[in-house]
Every structure is written in C-alpha cells, then in structure tokens.
Length: 420
Image (cartoon, rainbow, N blue to C red; front, side, top):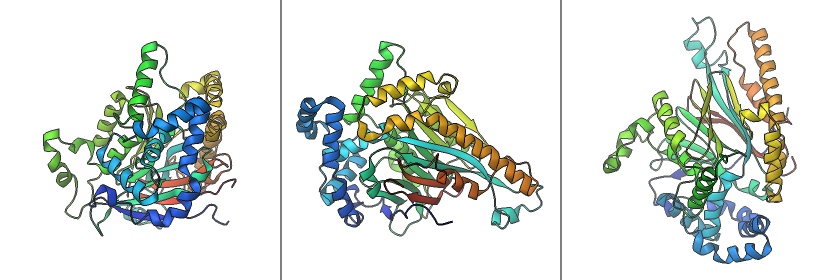
C-alpha cells in the first residue's frame, strides 16, 4: 500500500543561539509558502468573522499596539526574529501564537504496543512468557485553516551546535508554543475543548479574564506551558527563582541531554496543572507505561489515565452520556468563524471515539489470536492504521504523528494536502 501524505520538512533549532537568530536558517526554505499563506489576510478575515466588519477593521488598526508580546520573553524574542526574517508583522505572529491553541480539533491518545519479535528489547527479555510492550502516543491535528498546511515543520531542539536532540516538536513555522512534542520519558499533545466552567458569573468572568491576559501577553498560553515542559528540566528538578542560573546545568548531562522525565515528575506536573490558570483544553501526556488525559479548565484539571488505551477528542466524558450538551456547544461554535471549520469537527467527535474504540478492540483481539498472548497490546502497524483510517484522518486533518515517549522519538509523521 502506498504511503499517504507528504514528508514533513525537518530542521534543528539550536537553543544556545540568541532567540532572534534561532530560525534564521529555516525561514528562507519556507518563504514562498509563507507568502502564499498570507497570515495578514487570514488575521483580517478572522477578526471580521469574529466581531463584524466595522469593529473588525477598528481592531485591525489597533492590534499592533495591543499584540506586542507573548508572556515568555524568550518566545517573544524568537517571534521578533521570525518577523524580521519572514516579513510577517510581529503582531500577526503574536496573534497566531495566542489564538491557535483555542481552535484546534484533534484526535489524540496513547495505546500499549508490543515489541516486534526481532527487536532488541524483545531479545533482551526472551525468558519472559510474553513480549515486552510500551505506550505509544498518536495524534491527528484537524481544523479548517487549509493554507497553514504549507508551513508544517518538524523541529529538533539541541542545547548547543551538533549536540544531541533533547526534544522534538511538530508545529507550524512561526508558532513557538508546543501543540505536539516528545522528549525522553514524556510525549504531549493538545486538543480543543468546547466546554469550560460557566455555572456561575464568577467562573465565566475568570475564564474570560484569563483569555484576555493571555492575548495581551500577561499570562502564558497553554501551549507556552507545554513548551516549558518539553524543553525545561523535569518538574522535580525545577529550582527556586534564586537558583535559576543553576537549573540548566543540573537538568542536563555533560553532553547536553535533558534528564529523563520520570513518573514522579509527571505526577508533579499533573498536580501543577490542576490549579494553574488557563483556557480550556484537553492535554494528553504519554510516559513509557501510562497515558494521561487532563480535562483542563481555568484552575481545574481532573485527570484520567490508563496503562493500555485512552483517547481524547473534542468532547467531555459527560457528553457520551448526554450528547445534547455537545450539540449545544456545536451550535455555539457554528455562530463563530466559518474559516475554522470547528463545528463539524466537534460534531463528529463522539463518532470518532466510538469508531476508534472499535478499531482498538478488534486490533487487540486479532493480536492475541495471532500471537497467543493476552497482553492487551497491539502492533505498530495497528497504530499506523488508526491515524490513516478515513474516519479518523479526514479532509480537515493537517498532519498525523506517532511518538515514542520511551526513546523520546517521533516514529512516523505525515502532512496532508487540502482535500486529501
């Protein structure tokens, strides 16, 4: 069977360089595609659809004064460098970074995969009655901004020139937060969540206030928090502010590798997320032996986990019992910008879950029947089948990816052209 999708351009980002220079070698490769995306026009269209032509034009005129930065100084400096190299106005890049993670429909999850019989791990444990297995993280990213497919890029981060890769992110050029990433011991992805706490006026006010603080650059976006997790030291090793200068040396090996993200670090991360201010989103984390889904809201974050199979789409667990809640959310989304295509993606969320659950059950049964093992695991070919399935990978899918948190590597990735 021919491989679907296209290869994704891959580049190295050297974190030892000044932030303004880190993307200078990448932008020229994308310049024609950047020009064809026309982010300025996209931003104008979005404003008009959100608030109408009159108010949209007014906001367009004042946006350079309002959208001056993101919360992280390092990230802001990177955006300044990308702006200078690409010709995209800085306020457009800031808008891109603070709004994008509010608008993504996705399928993400973790699943236990058995090692191939010929693999080194399997040979090393040949005395075991069943072959070893590990968790694998898969994800598709879906939404209606078709022109952005042209600037999907894979980034390998290093601490110094020719140093080892400490983490990998699959993103859009010009987006410096993390939507999808992996490092040794942990992989992560982010999905749009259509619900947020709104039972009281205080809940609604606090949620909107946090959104405003993110847009104006006074708080981190959720994707910026994921960037800190992807590129920073494990949570247990993070030091007090007075000790920040020692943090990097204590969190890396002599060769520049980041220390592995351990289970204690994951638990600390989850505890931190439960009370942090943020927009609503589903956060999916995979360790070598477990998958976690955080139903994130402003200062809330209940966690689900599994050591076999767990997924997140664009609906809450409560929606599976009462689909009317999701229908109400879809109706509200449909009143927003049509260029996002989010209403159709969210409307199909329950169907995607039912379909993928069935695919997993069939894959487990087939694997156990073929191999005579009862490990509740599947093969890597099965996982690739998940993200290629026409009900999971649809015409709104920009890219699909499979990540291995054990080794901190991307195993498979593809970007898809519009209408394929």
